[in-house]
Image 1 (cartoon, rainbow, N blue to C red):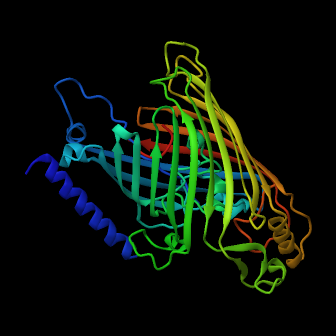
Image 2: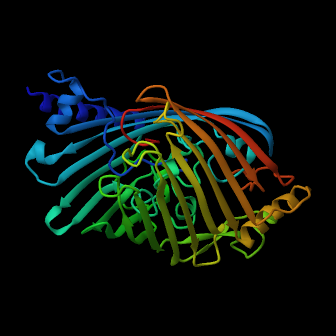
Image 3: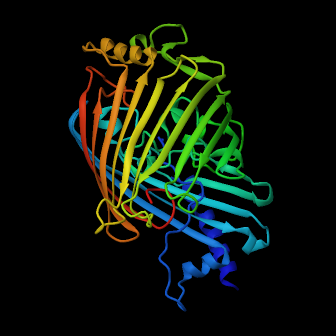
Length: 454
């Protein structure tokens, strides 16, 4: 049996065993669309098993990350905890494996563990530990077919897929530990963009004749996906469809000494949605409880994201560079938790010539909450006989430094500060408005190709 056949059989067995593990015994850091393994070049004349597999058309990838974080000031309470997970899979080049030019299969599984400082101690809806997810089980996180039609400049991706890494995707957001920009929080929460690892049925078509491109997609909306392991392929629990459209301009170091991205997009979400403040009787849910009022589908929103490399200490080298980024997005209806998200920052790779692959980054995200969302939070305090009023504006900031111990292993100490924390991530027993929160953290990441900072 050839190495190729042996590996295919092994991967099929792993997939089967993963399915069994998930059936026995939630919000999103995502995987890049098609990540490639970051394996060191083998010496000439010597190839390891991973190199041989890649040459035959099978590229393996694996990431493990652990986010330790401690709320040392402010929030609902002080606390510290770990959250993390592992993501692994493979990309199959079907031209090499089956003679199908331009075809690829992408398969990914994931598993997460730990607790959330954001939800348990501060109360905020946004994640502070990007690798934390509430479901501690094996997940099918991707099963897609990609077909590239080079002659017509069209690329099609379809299968079990999430929307957040196909549309409104930040270039640098996942280089940070917190997750307001990984995925883009507002499109994920208000737009209904499914995010990794919660894949549903979907497809994306991209036409890109040069640096310019246009993409359109259609994705199943299925809230129950968060409650299963991704192996339920039925459409019985689907509630609607998400249709995003994006036009943009993107370059890389291969074609541009100072690469840039510009993405302008919008979405339509046909699924029903709930009122942030009122119950089915039109009363304030935070005061009297009850089920949230539901509305028929028909939500819209728009976004714009931009980034550019603006400086290189050595014009002839791409390793060391300074990139800046900014974005803004908002829904076009008034029954959402958010009315605006705007993110900006920089990432400086190779600040020192002695450490050319290390990076330092600063990111700030401004959230504007709807009056309904703030009214709900104020009602919770009134109901629990507390005092204070929530602000409509929330600011999340992060400063981090990524130190590469080896090409595959890195650590990222980080400092986060949250101004006017919300409590939409933990609404139980709220009696006061949390003070501004200070969080210190440390990420340890093993990166062998796949999701995570690169």
